[in-house]
Amino acid sequence: MPRRFGAYGGAYVPETLVPALEELARTWREARRDPSFRRELRTLSETLGGRPTPLYFARNLTRRAGGAEIWLKREDLVHGGAHKFNNALGQGLLARRMGKPRLIAETGAGQHGVATAMIGAALGLRTEVYMGVVDMRRQRPNVERMQLLGARIHPVTTGSRTLKDAINAALRDWIANVRTTHYLLGSAVGPHPFPSLVADFQSVIGREIRRQSVRAFGRLPDLAVACVGGGSNAIGTFHPLLATSVDLLGVEAGGRSPRSAGAASLTRGRPGILHGTFSYVLQDADGQVADTESVSAGLDYAGVGPEHAWLRDTGRARYLAVRDRDALTAFRWLAQDEGILPALEPSHAVFAAVREAHRRPSSQHVVVTLSGRGDKDLEVVRRAPR
Image 1 (cartoon, rainbow, N blue to C red):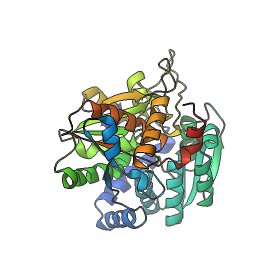
Image 2 (cartoon, one colour):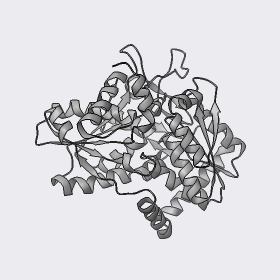
Image 3 (cartoon, one colour):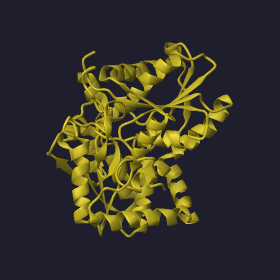
Image 4 (cartoon, helix red, strand yellow):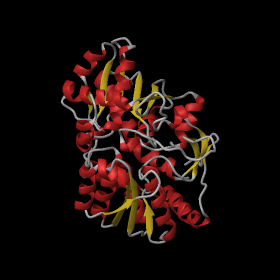
C-alpha cells in the first residue's frame, strides 16, 4: 500500500494516532495474505452484500444520448443501497481481527453510516456514527435506518455542520478512544493507509466491470465514469482499469451556479492538507478550508483522495464538475427512461456520461458506476426547483 501517490498522500496526524495507523496497515497486510480472511470477505460480499452487482444496458438512456451505448454498473443494488458496503465489510473484518469492539464512522449522505451500522450488527461490534445536522435534516430516512440497525448517532453542530465537520468529530473521538475503537473511514481520503485500503476494498467494482464488459459486449469499455466526493466509488472503478486503454472520467459536484466552487476540489481547488492527507482542497485566499455546497450530501466535501490528485496531475484520469440542476435533470432522466431511481451523487456522473456518449460513435461503450440508489433523496428532489 503506497504511502504517497506522487507528491500526494502521507499521514499528517497527532502522535496518538500513529500506532493505530501502523496497526491497521500491518493487520491489512497480514489479512491480504490470509486465505481465511479473503474467503470470509468474499463469502459475506456474496451472501450478505449481494455481489456481484449486474452491468445493465441503459437502452432508453442511450437513445436519449444519441451516441455511444451507456451501461450502468449497478452498485445501487448492493445491500444497503450503495457501494459503501464493500469498504465497510472489509474494515469491519479488520476491526474484529484487531480486537476492537467499537466502530465509529462519519457520514454525509448517510449511506456509509448505514453500511457501517449493518456491518456492526452483523459482526457484533458496537457502532456510533457522526453526522452533521444539516445532513441529518436532508437525509432523514438514512438517520432512521441507522438507528433501527442499532447505531448511535452523534449530531455534529460545529462548522458547516456537514461531512467535513463529521470527519473532524470522528477523528477527535478516535484520538480519545484509540485502544478500543476502529475509525471506519468511508472514503479514499485521510492518512495512510486509508486511501489505499479503501481503494483495495472498493476495487471489486472495477474487477467486475472488466469481466462483465467482456461478457456483455466482447471487450473493455471505451470510457468509465464515476462521481467523486472523497472518491471511493470512483477509485474502485478506476483502479482495475489503470493499466488499460479505458478513458477515465471523474465527476465532481459543481454547486448551484457558475460562480460557486460547489465541492469540486480537483477542478477548483489547490494542493493542501485536510484530514491527515496532502491532496487538492478547496481553500479561501488565506489557505483556510472553504465552505462547500452541493445538492448531494455525499459529494459535499472540500477535499478528495490523494490518488485522484495524482491521476489528475498525470492526466491518466480526467475530472469535471456538474452543477446541481444538471444532476437533478439526470435523476429524472434515469427515473423516467429506465425505471431506476439513482442517488443524487451518481446522478452527476449520469449527466456527464450522457453528454460524453453523445460525442462518441454508437460503436463505443460508456460504463457509469451507479454508486447508490435514490430513496434517500426523494424529498430533496421533490423540493428542488425544476
